[in-house]
Every structure is written in C-alpha cells, then in structure tokens.
Image (cartoon, rainbow, N blue to C red; front, side, top):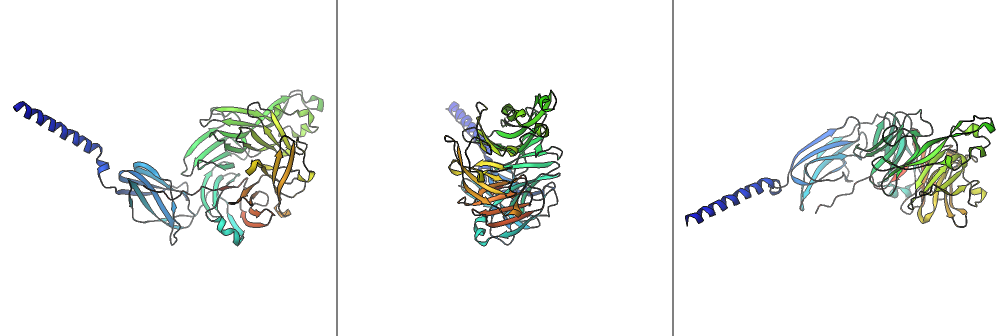
Amino acid sequence: MIKKDKILTILLALAGLAGAIILYLYKDDLRPLRIKHIELVKLPANRLRFQVNVQTTRNCNTVLAYWKTGTKDTLYTKVSADGSNHKLFITATEGRTRYQFKVQAAVDGDVVESKTYPLVTQPIYQATPYFTLEQVDSALKPELKNKYFLTQILTEPGSMVIIDSKGEIVWYEPFKKGVKVSHWTKDKTILAIVGPEKIPSSGGDEIIEMGLDGKIITHLKKGKGDMDKLVHHEVRKDKDGNIYSLTFTQKIVDLSSVKGKQQDTVKGDGLVLFSKAGKKLWEWSVLDHLDPLADPEILKHKKDWVHGNAAFRLPDGNFLMSFRDLNQIWKIDFKTGKVLWKFGEKGDMRMAPAEYFHAQHYIHPVQDGNYMLLDNGDKTHISRAMIFKLDEAQKEAKALNIVTLPPEYYTTAKGSAALFGKKKDKVLFCLTDPRSFLITDMKGKILWRIQVGGDPYRLEEIDDFLYTKPTFK
C-alpha cells in the first residue's frame, strides 16, 4: 500500500512538472493578446519611409493602418506574420503631410487595436525632380484613383521614383549614381540599372533589386561574381525569376579593306541572363549575327554599332530585342541563339512603308499576341505608339493601332509607350525631350499630362503598389 502511494505521489509530481513545463513553454499562447510597445523610427536617409517596431504579448499577425488626417481613405502596410516582435514599414506617403496610424494585431480570430498616433512627413530634398500635373480630363479621374507610376532619374545623383496620378511623389530611393532604367516586378520589388553618367547609352555597372522597405534583395556588380560586363537600357525578370538585361559586347574584326585596322574593335550589344543568385545562365551577342563590313559606314559606327535599346523575354523563352539604328525588332531563339525574324525597315516582314518606325523604344507584347512599341520618329519628327500584328508564317506585319502625337511631343531618344486602363483603351507615354508623361485615347487626344523637372527614361504603371486590407480570421 505504501509503495502504491509513493508511485502515485511520484506520478503526480511528474505530471505537475510536465504541466509547469508546458505552461512555461506556451505561456504566451495562454495570455490575452495585447500590444505591449510601439516605436516610430524615422529613417533619415528617406523622408517618406517610416519603420514602426511593435511588440505583442503573443505570436500574432500585425499590420499598420494609416491615413491622411481628416480623410477616410485608409492605407495598409505589408502584414508581419506570426511573431511577437514586428518591423512594419509605412511606404506610401506624400511629403509635408499629416497622417495618423494605428496597429492592428490578430491571432485565432482575436483582433486588437492600438490607440491612434500622429505622423508628419517632411519635404523631400534628395535626388528627386518635380512633377507638375498640368492637365487631366474629368472623365479620366475615376480611372486614375489609386493609380501609381514608376520612373527614374538618370543623371547624378539619381533616384527611383513612384508618383501618384497627381504627380505627388509617394516613394523614392536616392542614389549617388544615376538610375538608368527601372522596372516594377510581380514580386512588388523594383529592379534597376545604376551607374555613373560617364557610362554611355543608359549603361550601368550595377543591377539592384529593392523592396519598398528599402531593403536590397539582389545586388549584382560588374567585376564581382559572374557579372563581367556593363549592362544598359533594360533589366527585367522572366517567369522563373531570373534577371535579364542588355549588355555591351565587342569583337576584333579586320577592317583594313575599308581603311580601318587589321585588328579593329567593333562594339555592339547583347543579352545576358542571370539566376536569382547572380550566376550567369546565358549570353548572346549581335556581333555573331551581323557582318560589320556590310555597313558602308562601319568606321563611323564601330564604337556603338546598331545600338540595342530594349528587350523582352516572351513566355516561350525567346527574346525580343530592339535595335535603334537598324529601325528593327528581332526575335531571338533562346535555345540556339538564331535570329528567327527581323521586323521593321529592311527586315523579313512585309510592311506598308507608312508603318515603318524609326529609332524605336520599349518593345513589348500586348494582348492577343501582338507587339507594341514607341516609334520615336527620327525621320519624320513625329512620335507614335504602334501596335502590330505579326503573321510569322506569312512573314507579314500590319499595324492594328497607331496613336500619333502632336509635333511638340516629338522625342528624339528614350521614352516608352504602353497600353493603359482597365480596358487597355488608352496609351501611357513617357517622352524624354518634352519631359512629359501623357495619357491619350487611341486617337491621340491628350487626357492627362504631367511635366517632369528631370530626365526620365521610362514610365511604368503600377497596378499593385498599395497593400490591400488584410482579412484576419
């Protein structure tokens, strides 16, 4: 009997110890959810980005809700998931503006809120230009609500810039170097080529991918790892998350027959593809597919021959590439490197002469397998957005839509044109020489115009800049 009592006592003691251990290990999960501490951190390097540190009594999801003082339009940060120490970033604000914010925390359907705190943004003084809204059609205003646009400043110091439809800067990141081109990815990050002004042709020595919180996600630099050449004009991600860009290439060629050197250097363009980790996966050079001696002015052009200025990787893995000085778009087979066709002046496709484009930029696919570009109009001094249907089997190209701009919006170089709106029935232009951003209808009527106090290369619409209101369950 005594032995049984001792065994029972030991078992009860062990059960009590186990219970104490479980209670200690899971004490946070047994407490009521509370927000213990909130700290607003102003980041001196950026006047529109704010870090808020939050501590909670339990592991939970947290988010910040914030809004302009006196308004009801609430914005949200990215949700910080499943922790008790959280770093949240307010990223979509305007300078010189009063805001309010509060913390929301949730676990297992239990939602708690903090009190409301004030936040005042300061004027921006870093490498950002001014953007002035000069015209907006009243019928377009509903469609412009919550529309945002990514652009960049090429000169030093440079910057990535996101503006709203009123031209207000709502996000930016300054750099000592110029930002030669930028691109919004499906991962809500910004890819950019960064480089000093001394690198020609919108070239740079770095590829940077950055999150809205300012964190650098990917950083490739010439001379480090597999990046052995400068890049220029284009940087994007393909469907697998690999990064591709245009690059400079060169080749030693015998140009003595045209009064050049026997071992002369011809500089051209190529494509390069990097993995997410920065490993070079593939490379291609235009100099393997053209004969320099076929150009009667090769001595004049040899330092920048044919001038590639845009690229796009298609869903089938092949590439589109634009060559400004050829007035052509090429399709390049990824597996073999073979040029599948050349579309444009003196290309493989039959075209109406009135539909030739000159010094074009920003080739990209649009719906129904068609292709869109900005015709800078180097020969006509008239810039146009053009959408083409290509019959690859019959080797024929036909313009489906041509949106012609007034002569005062002619842009000699750079720039972009893309479809805009829910119905894709408008065109978004970036025009470098007039320093203007435009939205037009398909007849060229200007519906929205922003004047730019800087030197933009490209403009992209961002559909998913804002975080949506979270649903806590």
